[in-house]
Image 1 (cartoon, one colour):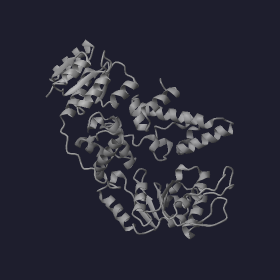
Image 2: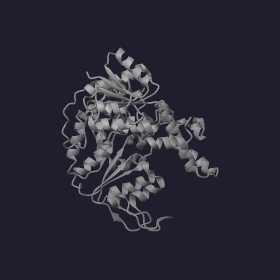
Image 3: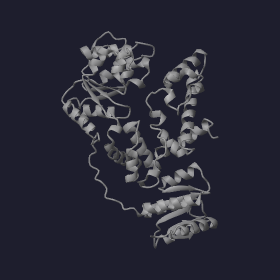
Image 4: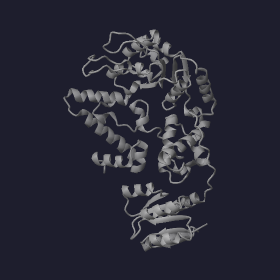
Amino acid sequence: MKPIWIVDDDRSIRWVLERALAKASLPCRAFAQAQDVLAALEAETPQVLISDIRMPGVSGIGLLQTVKQRHPALPVIIMTAFSDLESAVSAFQGGAFEYLPKPFDVDKAVELIRRAVDESLREVGPQEPAGDVPEILGQAPAMHEVFRAIGRLSQSSVTVLITGESGTGKEVVARALHRHSARSGKPFIALNMAAIPRDLLESELFGHERGAFTGAQATRHGRFEQAEGGTLFLDEIGDMPSELQTRLLRVLSDGCFYRVGGHQPLRADVRVIAATHQNLDERVKQGLFREDLFHRLNVIRLRLPPLRERREDIALLARHFLARSARELGVEAKRLSPQAVERISQLPFPGNVRQLENLCHWLTVLAPAQLVQVSDLPEDLQPGGTPSGTPPLLLPETPVAQVPVLPAAASFGLPADASAQTWTDLLAADVERLLSEGGEAVIDDLTRRFESTVIRTALKLTQGRRIEAAARLGLGRNTITRKIQSLGLES
């Protein structure tokens, strides 16, 4: 094995690391400045390079950039006594293996160096040809049934109801049904019933005439008209308001509809595909969903299995998502060790395929080595940890009592016995209370409290690690820093 090179203008740091590496039987060579390292690189290369970030002359970041240009596969560990966001971002953007703030625990530093050595010694296997990636991945028997159904429905325009838990890929299947149908040359229009305010949903679906209501300054085509000749995908159909269920039933029955404020019937040549994570049979029994509409939608029901019912697909999906994340970020794709594959294959994944995709993106951004070990997984997914499941912003609606990371009712000024409601119910009640009390700028106040709660919770779960919290929330590193400052969360 080649020696490990240490470069630091602080003699005491060089001395400590030299002694620690000698004790660990790891050969090393020390340098006082980056210029000496660059000169030595002309004749040989180290196994691993450990560099301070602030040194006279060439800085650690400058050395990192030069080394990566000449030897892209050489692991570089950046050390600094100035632990700030800019230093960390510069190090990782420059391709550093890891960022080591001073003062550091010597044993942990040696452990990190061993991992960098292992990374430098790994054999790079042959890359799989890019080829065409299948639109839906899966080898489990349950997925074969889905593929078979898509094939049989390819030449049909029959209405399809797709059921399955959140994150199982219902829209992906809907798009596949459209792509392989005779309508593939026409539009595929998607509308999420749960994402549109109740009072705007009718106009979104059917459009409106000019002057139909205040603010309707021009005629607007709704989703049915936009999807003419193609496919209309109605996601989360179980959340459709009862009055709109009647209108949708009429369209499915006779193929005609009216714009809001209109008097001229319009024909709808549209194939409807609906999806829901809810139990529509149960909602029909509860009187929350029209039985006649349910039967109109339920011509062909296609159930998507949760990820826990297709565990043999987890490794395949993970490789796909890691490769895709790497392409998006312009980096080399990470690989899962057999132990990491075994570990994630045991996880419950309540967020299903979407949660696995988020995990792979997290690993692409934050895992230090190209070969991902169990110890590189988020702490709550490691053995002995308590899986927290999907990040709060991706959770389906569940009772507040079952979602400990969300704020308690009392924090929004609501009664404590409101725990049987969903958090959106509690939010609606709080908005109503504030407005009835004559409150102003209500949305700004609630947005500030919501963001404070989400970010504070993420920082708690990541033990204050801002970069990890930002990645799990889907925020940029600069964005979370700016929000922490503006929300007064520094303490």
